[in-house]
Figure 1: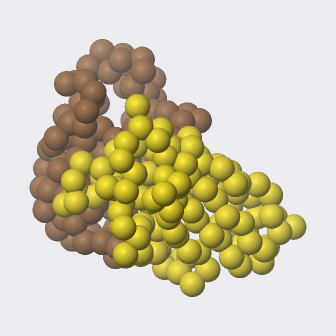
Figure 2: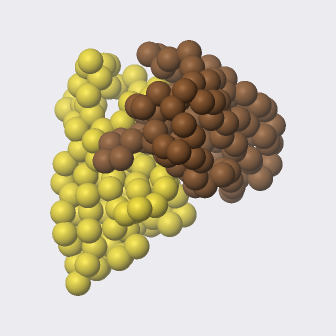
Length: 108
Length: 121
């Protein structure tokens, strides 16, 4: 099973600043990686797939990069609605689909 | 618009059974694989099971294998999760999620609002 590790666990950012979230895979997942956003009390929402492709309706301030074992989600200028928990998920070698433990982006 | 609506959650004693349903609308259900993903209180996401669009293949997380069964009825646009032998550690919000984008991209593009399952004495 591929283990996904996200860092940091919590990221404190001021509105308008850039946020950089990391996700590491225990073995190469090529570019078979997705990112999700989950706001409190809500279901997750797909942001990025194939490591860098934005899902339908996702603003351009969200961008994904990386391949192999190291991935990054960047939010270029944080808006109030972006404060949430973010998860990465691999689909290179499955089942099982595996998620990272999440990064909480909070207001500084 | 795409909608996924889960139902069937509740409080159940350890060892008992529960069946969750997820009713889909707004897309051609029979074209898409479907998943169940759960989230224990205050914890992260855990994939539970997947079923292919035609129901021909099913896979499970090791934590539920042999106890949970995923199925679907394409005539009713509904996917199910039969949960037997429930344990306290199965307590979670259970989401159904569509395997969208493409067959090669196993990302989950639409999610339901979730249904809470509590296993407790």
